[in-house]
Length: 128
Image (tube, rainbow, N blue to C red):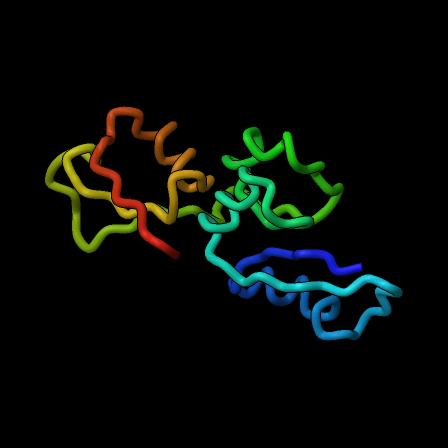
C-alpha cells in the first residue's frame, strides 16, 4: 500500500522523516510517496484532504479536521522559536503602516500576526 506523505524541506521535517523515507525502518507492506512542499501548499492540500498523511500549521488544523486525525506526536510550537517579526531598521510608524511578508494565509505565522496586530492589512503572502 502506498501512503501519500507530505512535509516541508525544513531541517526539522527532513530529520524527522529521514529514516522512514530512506528505507532505514521496516514499514512492511507500506510504501511512501513523498511530497516536499512549502508549508502553505501543505496547508492548502490538507484543507482539501489531498494527502494521506501531512504536516500542517496549527492555523490550518480546524478546516482540515474533516479529512484528518491529529497524531499524538510530531508537534513544533514554542515560546522563542518563531514565527518572528523581523525588520531592517527601527520602525518610524506602527507595524500596521508597513507591508509585512507572511509565509501563507493558512500559516500559524499569519494567525499569530493577526492576533498581535488585528488592524494590519498590508500583508503580502510569499512562498517560504
